[in-house]
Length: 327
Image (tube, rainbow, N blue to C red):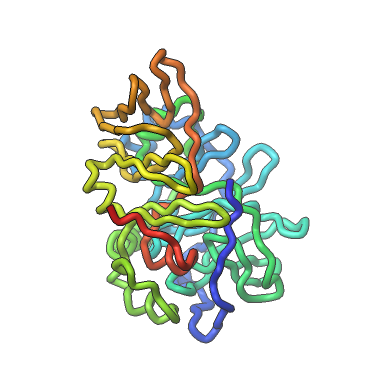
């Protein structure tokens, strides 16, 4: 996993929102209970089309209903002996998973304001503010410190997650109060159409990259040295499957018909054609349920770059000077 580092300018508290914009609602969820995704589907805990925010750690897929994510924005838990902390920004439409231990201390995070139109997270122990994508502390006594990135998040349905049996998918969930459920529905409207809060978002931004529309969705891929933004309209112009290069390596970007988000993988192929839930490549090779199958039917895990489904303004502000795939 690429350790992300921001190239942003010095923090200006004068244009930051330094209090919870949803004050009065819980701003962090600690989860410990989980159940197999197949069991959750069979028992009606989630429906096949339930939208989830998921992440993979050490070959294990964890997923949380997006309705719960939108109500809290910060969720913490533990994988084996490894604590983790997941973020999600309703405006920029992406999140990250960090190790919440800094300098040997377990920090407890919550949502707390915004900067550059992006969620700010805050820890109770040092009362500092952190960038929710790079994990860099921007303001407070921990300024200059950086959380270690564990992995990235990915949006998918419960049916899509359940198909990834090689990852033993688990559902992390929690009951929402009626007030939280109403809040989540409002936040879903914002996530779907951030122009509802455009004035507030823009007020926290100093200089903006105007090469693409502010709220355009795209898949950003990145390393420590380079970043590339692939607008969804470019992907869809290629019938939801395109091949390109990234840092000299062949890159395949695709979105299967039943998937709600695109993904990128390193794979060499002259062609890529969608056929129901299968992506057909050269010489009998294909991708299905997040596995790469060779012509003789053997499966292997796909090699993927670090990637974020994100709105343009947030990606460009977090990774200034990024390249753009335009055709």
